[in-house]
Length: 254
Ligand SMILES: CC(C)(COP(=O)(O)OP(=O)(O)OC[C@H]1O[C@@H](n2cnc3c(N)ncnc32)[C@H](O)[C@@H]1OP(=O)(O)O)[C@@H](O)C(=O)NCCC(=O)NCCS
Image 1 (spheres, helix red, strand yellow):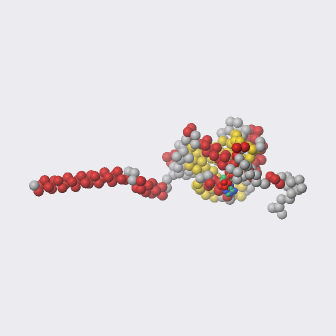
Image 2 (cartoon, rainbow, N blue to C red):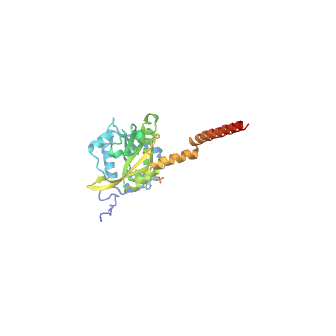
Image 3 (cartoon, rainbow, N blue to C red):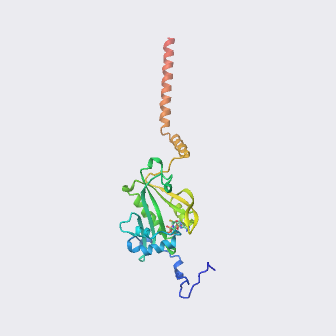
């Protein structure tokens, strides 16, 4: 019985939701969707949306921080018909290999650089598969690819292993699975597994593995960079030596 929604003739569910709430809406064009940063007046709306989208409970101060006018977060909303239909909350921070959450994202040589973390990305149920999340993520990536943010070398996020929609979304956006995090989440008292996904930007790259070293060496051999000039130099020296030896023998014979 718990799975059945009972609808009244006025189109309202008995639990208060509207029957039309869940119907997917196809947008003809994304041109009518505006993007703007969150402001303090959005707090209640954003809180209601996040409580609907995410199984995690965020503290009230978190909503105050992400909607504050001088927020240290990148909190962007997609607006359609004066309503928030999607939002992304992200943060840029210095990379530190010592922090468990970031471990092994960047190569050691990049430890003085920055990374970006996506805390939340959600779209109102009926507006999903219209490209709204793509619009929000692309804006954030564009922001990170600006010359003044070249210090940001990777974007990462955590996702529940069971959240297939989000996993397919991020994989489609070229994010790559970085690690499996057993019992990463605690949801309503239960431990749930997570994945960490990473996208490298601005010439960022992960620590090198033995496989990368082999690939690098093979690439050098195939492209001939470094190896062929060295071989040419050695061959030239050898021929020179043979030529000198031969002319000395001839000289001695005469
Ligand atoms: C994940 C989420 C943000 C995607 O939002 P969206 O606006 O529907 O995403 P887009 O329309 O931009 O999707 C872009 C592409 O991602 C992939 N994708 C997105 N949702 C998908 C799904 N449910 N199943 C399969 N592929 C999906 C598709 O390739 C899609 O392209 P297509 O529609 O042309 O096939 C949305 O499902 C959501 O809000 N989920 C709940 C909150 C959440 O889990 N957030 C992620 C954790 S931070």
